[in-house]
Length: 364
Image 1 (tube, one colour):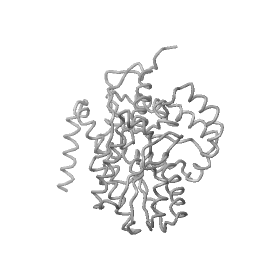
Image 2 (cartoon, rainbow, N blue to C red):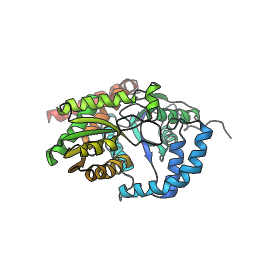
Image 3 (spheres, rainbow, N blue to C red):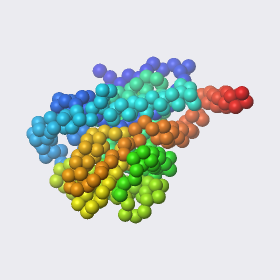
Image 4 (cartoon, rainbow, N blue to C red):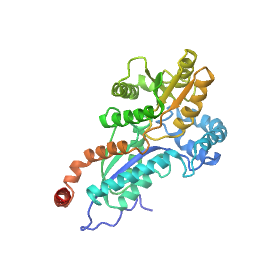
């Protein structure tokens, strides 16, 4: 049995391509206990996600969490599941379809795009194998996390490196680290919120809820906390919000250790009890709606706020497959692959022919 995976047959006449791989967190295959058990086993065993010593964590995970948690988690997933499947997968696929059409229109077949999930399917290694079959000898990986964290973006890097270690031929590799302060990302967020407010009115407070991580990660040098706050500050500025009308919080705490504060759920309760009539919640750390936004915030957060005296609760959807968000992704991909495209065989001729076609269209 060969040590390394076989590669697609090489021919000197083959045209090398650029592969773009979007990677999102992941989703179970179905809202069932067996599917959740498989998903959680992969997700929670990642040492980037849980940094407890392996022997201790193996016992906790396999003897306590996996026998008990999948059934409850499956019920939560069932509450957000759609006829098309997992919302996270559906929105990711729609974004990829839009980008595929745009990239084909701009670059022909020189740039191809696919997606993978860090946990679940399609796996990162499977997606990379598919791109290699298409003779992609340059690979741009775009983790779908605006803010860098060791438990998210760095974990994607681990999966990519593990996949490439098994391959005989290594593509030239580039990975986007973050985009938390890109003007086009902030613009898309602000536009989505303004559109929502135009249809539903404005709140007394806007809560920006980011996924939490253990406080220990900040103490050890992870910049996630700072990047979340920068996103929040830039978004508030773009919306013209005064201090006191918005607040950055952190959700999805897991376990008994201290996580980044303030926690979202207690903050919503405190606002309700303090007499805040209406609160809107947006989740700028998620680019696609998923369990953490649709169930934890839009359902559980709503209940927390309304049962403690709040009058009106609104959840503002993630960017999902908005065209301005796809515009931003297209620009990121264009910027990151510009030098590669310039070195592609026939790149100059392709650029000239497309420029001529555009000029001809303008003349008509």
